[in-house]
Image (cartoon, rainbow, N blue to C red; front, top):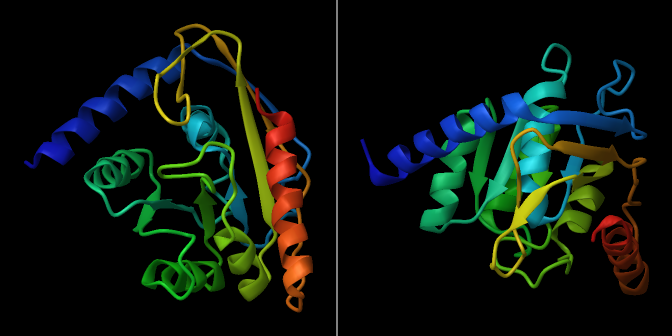
Length: 211
């Protein structure tokens, strides 16, 4: 068993135990958990909220009528650990960067969306800067027609790591409050100015909810 696999197993086991103690509040304005939302979508949230969103997917993602979540992870060793960790929560992964146009990862994400799978992206990851949204998710939505679903998690009690993103770890027996914002549709034909405005609007939507 590889070092990455061992670390991922330990991490997922600890998280599952932690999540058992968490109280989850979900405000689904975008309808992601509703049966009448059938389109594949691009779910996005800031990198430091990963644990809050993972807890939400683990408990509330409607596996009976949606086709699963694929997470974009970095090609680094840390990305490999994250890829194996999310697999323990029933999610798939694609390795690469969402910000490099024409990359193999981007093409793989397009294929998954066309096969009706959902994609989860942290648009300021994997290395930041914090709360800065790259163009990849806008390009992907524009190319595929998939709606963007912004998500935000806040924590009643937590630890903040001294990392570039201020990574947040919820404390046992705390409350995670998650908001699924209303969908954002990106037109296929955009000028450079309109593309940048769409990128900024999404960035502002996520920033306005962040603390």
